[in-house]
Image (cartoon, rainbow, N blue to C red; front, side, top):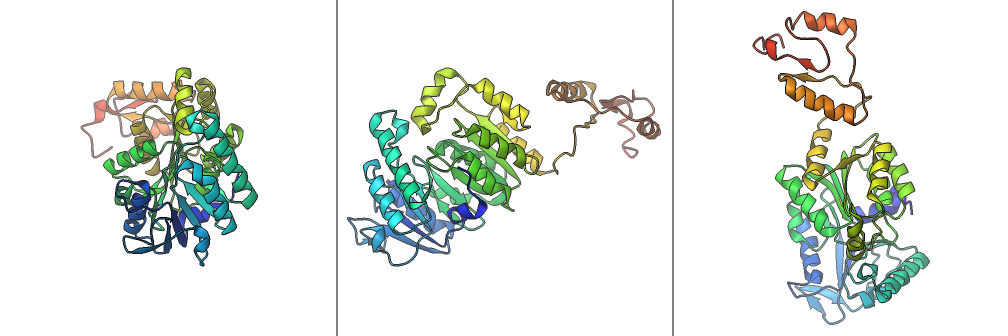
Length: 368
């Protein structure tokens, strides 16, 4: 699907949240979600649903979401998979706008039972117009409208910044976030999509295109539900905000692993890679590359063309950079006669070609 900005706003800046499946067991996601919300500085209302408890950590708990009289924007669902269809139906009856299904046990299991369950919640979500992140998702984090709708409370240490991280895998999303912290890069949004029931990468990219806090986007992808729409959106957005992709399940033998992890059909890696290149999307070959490339690109405005000039104090380095550029199918800029005349006034002993080696003039640093 392709949702508009306003359609997804309540995921990132909800005024009210309910945790369905709340728990007082410190080792369960239902407890960790409470901790994440409380410690994030969330300023809205949040409610708990637990059929077995009247209070959890001093907070009143309802037996069903339908018992809550107030309007609710976002539901975080952490009940066993078999109970999710009932909960989705109740959320629909309550006119809740969106749900994050953290629960696992759906098509990623690779069996008929899990697939039927996912089809059932998909049908119910469609009937009620409910937008869903997940199932089998970590959740979302937005430091600007402070909310940590995940079961990882320590993600609240993430500082505000310009990098949005969107990951199919919750674990890889957390790992990318940790790498960003180590590189002192702030995050604008963190999204874990899981099985992409009715919200996929293409929808989140649409949202991030108009998100003023986001300056670059890092993606961890195993498979894409709607490749054509994804590439159209990514290609357009990439002209304004650089998109860096790490594609997992490159080897065909790993396709079944991707299916059992996030229910994704990984597809042929060579086709993915060629499509990324065609649409000008940067492909990273390690997770740290995603962070490093994003960091570099956020420090400068998008290039207006492919006219590259290389200035180097070491000839070997210039050759390596030129190789990388030319191997990407891009031409090196040719210096105009005016440029050569002006540069020759400063650098007397260099070969005035591109790459421009200034090693012989490095001692004249005041001129450079």
